[in-house]
Image (tube, rainbow, N blue to C red; front, side, top):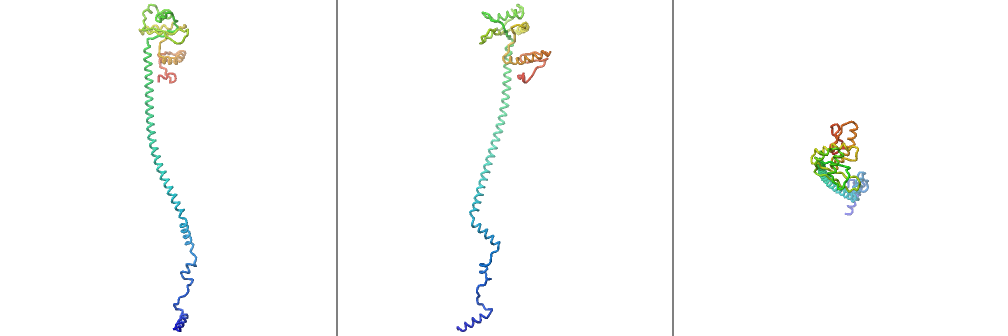
Length: 269
C-alpha cells in the first residue's frame, strides 16, 4: 500500500492535468485585494465618506443654525405683520384726527365769524342808543354844577342859537362824565336829546367853535372811536387832494365810494 501511494504521487507530479491543489498565486482574488492599489475615484469617495463620518457635528451645527435662522425669519415676519397692522391702525386714527381737526377748524371759523357778527351787532346797538347824544367839551365846572343849564347857556353864547329856540330844546338827561383823574381840565358833558332834529340843529352849529377851546362831537362806543381815529388821517388827506370825503360812524366815503382797506379797515371784511 505504501508503495502504491508513492507511485501515485510520482505519477501526479508528472501529470500536468493533475488536480493536486497549488499554492495561492498572485492572481488570486485574496492577493489582489491586499496587494493591488485603489483607483483615484474610489479614494476620493472614501475620503468624503470618511470626512462625513468623522465630522457629523459640523453638519448638525449647520442644520441647527438654519433652524435658528428660520425661526428668526418667522418671528421677523410676524413682527412685520404686527407692525403693518399697527401702521394701518395709526393711519386710520390719523385720518380720523385729520377729519376731526378739519371739522374743528370749520367750526372755529364759524364761531369766529359769529363772534365778529355778534360784536358788530352789539356795536351797532350801542351806536344807535347814542344816536341822540352830543358830547360838549371845555365847559368849566360851576358850583353848584348844573349840566343842563350850562349846556343851554353854551348853546346861546358859543353856538349862537337864539334863546327862544334853545328854550324849546328838551333832553332825556344831561350829565357830566366823572373821572378819577384829578386835573384842571373840565370833564365832558353828555346831553341826550328828546328829539333827533334838535340834536341835528345843535350839531350843525358846531362850526361856531372853530378856533376855540370848546368841542362838540357825537358820542360813539370806544371801538367806534378807535376806528374813526384810523380814518381821520385819510379823510384829511383826501380833502387836501380836493376830493369829497365824509366819515359816517366808522365808514369813510370818498367821492361817494366806500373806502376799504384790509389793513386800515379790517372791520369791513
